[in-house]
Amino acid sequence: MVTQKPRVKLTYEDYRKTPEDMRCELMDGELILAAAPRTTHQRVQFDFGLIIGQFVKDGDWGEVFFAPTDVVFSDADVVQPDILFVSKERAHVITEDNIRGAPDLVVEILSPSTAERDRGYKRDLYERHGVKEYWMADVDLATVTVLRLGDGGLFEIVGTYGEGESFTSAVLAGFVVNVDEVFGV
Image (cartoon, rainbow, N blue to C red; front, side):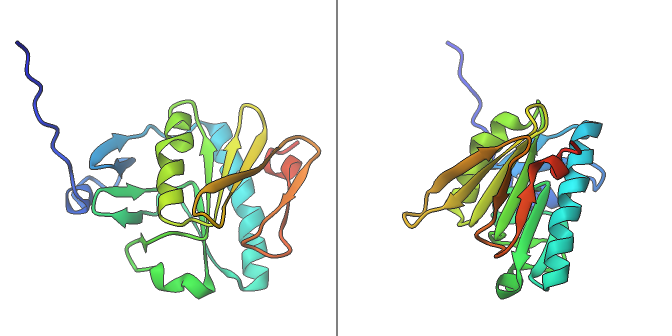
């Protein structure tokens, strides 16, 4: 008879002891290692970040952060979204070391190695902790799927937008994203 060893759940304190140059996240107490993203991923992250960052800065809406910024949801869940926005009204979640609680907006750029987690565990995590908007940018398809937190506390898919299309944000009033600009089309 084969017995399984009980899985040891790590905590935020364990996570903080990992080397700074080690890309990882803590999901349900499990340390998830991540390779550096592809160059296409980084280009999209840069362009998307510029678009969001300039709008936020011009309107004095709050702050935009990029991975590797820790978002601490619990002692067992610490993630590093590709891009995140925290409004001025919620600035209290920003600390010197990390973000302690839900950002208003999270953007994940899907990579082959992370897409399943981004669409599954992280989506559920963001929903459970009250992220108001979650955008998933699919580099291979050049699309952005927009999810918004509904009245029942669950994400609702607003739409998936591709070449030649644009979408708006409920979190950033007046912000319009042209998908072609995000993917350099």
